[in-house]
Structure formats: structure tokens, C-alpha cells
Length: 187
Image 1 (cartoon, one colour):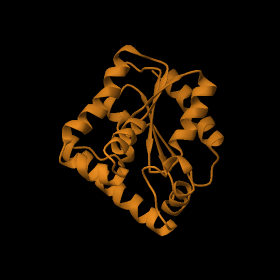
Image 2 (cartoon, helix red, strand yellow; image 1 turned 120 degrees about the horizontal axis):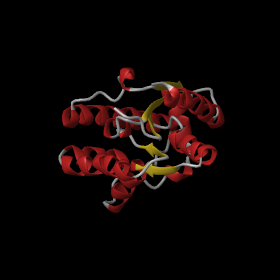
Image 3 (spheres, one colour; image 1 turned 45 degrees about the horizontal axis):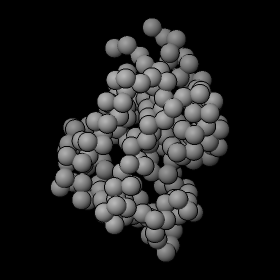
């Protein structure tokens, strides 16, 4: 399989994918393809939280397939970009596949304090945020296995795993770039 100049970035909820991808875009001069924004927009358009929309999509797999196939289609005619998508690594196997992991308590705190999430994730307490994130992650894992027969959290699917719990987004991006350049140079 020929390698493409594409980094697929996935990982745990609130692991820093958005901020890391912004830094990668700046440092590499790459473009971006974001499935998550599209998913959130669909949820908002249907007046649902992202968790409610996850449940809805279970009964409407064509929506999930449409979202995931869009990344593969984009990669057919584009290069030099970041895919910020849960299954970007699966949709574009010739990409450099990165998984960002994070401690669930740290992730919940990040999400709870993220004002950009409030229109689709509004919780009164940090514990409610955490429990919703756990539920959502489990829903996604089950859906991906049922639809595609894959396990997103299986680390053998990725070229690089980075724990973002105690790293800045700049440190994460620098690690990704260093390993990406090594990957590109390997035959």
C-alpha cells in the first residue's frame, strides 16, 4: 500500500484532537478534514445531544456510513491533510494513523470546561459529563464493531499512540510530526 501525506487523528473523547490538529495544520501547512464537526452539526440540526444522536445513528447506519465514507472519498483526490475523524484510520488505511488517549477524569474536565461543546453537551456537574462521555464512548465502540467489524481502541490499528493526559497540545503535535516523518521515510 502506497503511503499518502495524510495523518488520520483519532482517539478518546476530549483527548485534544481538535487543538492538536490545528497545530499540525499550522506546522505542516496541511489542510483538514473533520468528521466530528459534521456529526455535531447533524445532532444540533436534529435538536439532539451528541449522545442522543449516537443512539439515533444506531438505528440509521446509513448516516454513519455516509459520514465515514466521506473521508475516504476526500482522500482519493486530496493529499497533505489531517483527518480528524473517529474512523479516519479505517477509511484511509494509507494514512499515518494516530490515536490520542487520555485519562477519563482529565477528559471530562476538559469537556466540561469547553464552551464550544455546550450546544450539544450541557451538563450541570463534572460527574454528569464524565458519565455521559463513558456512555458515548461505549455506544461508539459497539456501533463501530456492529457496522464495520472493527475495534477502534485496538492499538494494533495505529502507527502511533500518544497519551495526552499530561502533555500540551504542542508537545503532542511535535511528537506526531517527528514520528510521521520517520514513517514517511520508511520503505
